[in-house]
Length: 539
Image (tube, rainbow, N blue to C red; front, side):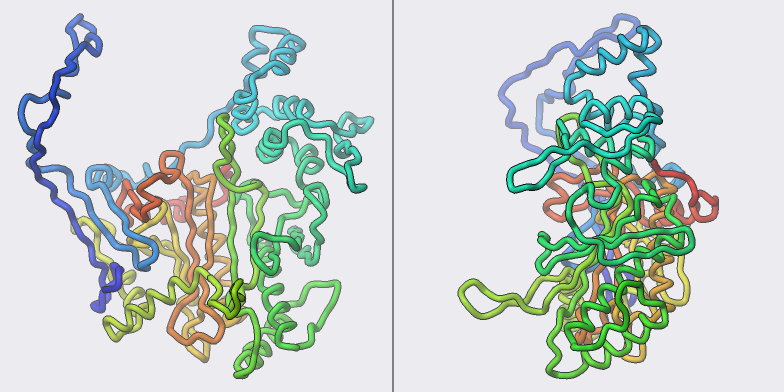
């Protein structure tokens, strides 16, 4: 049986646990003791923790169990008590803005500036890490930055660059005392931009990766870097906002920015496929215009239909937004906060070490597995039933109130809250448009109108999550392989990391715990759109 909440009736299957049970008491001793006192002096003890007899639970709180629509993503469990509290006030589903934080100002209330600076120089490393991540004081961050690396300063007192030293092999290396501290300071949005640029943003400061693409239009500027020796086989590309177009918050991302980031993605995928198919690349040393891109896409589809076409058949696209680092030395999310997206092509086959080949992995193949298993079991198209279930959703708890999972849509795409969220705040974007060949399952099949809708939907999702206070979001594309005809639709998943839900053993088992009903999270998201909160910073 395929593990999915989607049914052939176009509904979601929702389970509910109504626990009652008895537990045999096997304890041999009673460690009863005082816990403290009430204000009137009455002692409070722990007697309730040491029952004399077996324990009976007559009616524990209900837990809703919802298999994910896609079998490889496990199951979500919703605590009814937590969720009903949120149902009464969906606007409470948000993260509070970070508080102002400045140790330098605090010390300045008790010491003169020179004494305060001396204290800074002697702070333990964990405190420095916490300040680097959480300070909102630009002066304090500059003091930290200048203390962890050597800089070349201009006559105006502003940094001009880093100081370098020669290393073995003839190369050079920046003089940085503590790379983690350096990186954490540079990723703090409150650091002045002049320091951000010389520390991490200026082309070349993070390494020798070549810039092989560029978008500069409508006040936006994006560089495309080649990661030659990549952990992704065959190399990958990174579209980074340029050093003269600094974006440290998704709420600050403009439609022009998103168009540039995504244009470089579409362009690289199309050019890579064209080269593999022996098609002429129409330009050098400039971006393809929209019409040129569309013409190349059509030629690729025609050439790829040939039975002897040899090419990489799947796309890989992802985006980790948000950087955080704890005083204990644990990096909590991406390598840097400046807006960037990564992408590559995935081959159909990979050679085996002992000869022969095997299928190469693409996350979209996991969606294809669900689609295939669903058809084998029910004789129906999975995405047809999935869309019907989203459109006709009923509240998880069966009660009155909002039932829609839809956050935003146009003629080509649908932004919605999945019935079973693998992040408490997960959103998904599905392409609902069809091409002449059927459902659009990848960006090669997406024409210019569909691509524009995808870009708008991604921007909308990020702005909504930013409006709720999300500061760390991973975004994933689930594409259908080129040439596969299975009804699979292109899907994106947006997965915020929440301070109280970073992932633990439950998530490692694909058991995802949620404190709200998905319908109420959809209400909160629509509230952001209706309330005009999209332009508010999430820094």
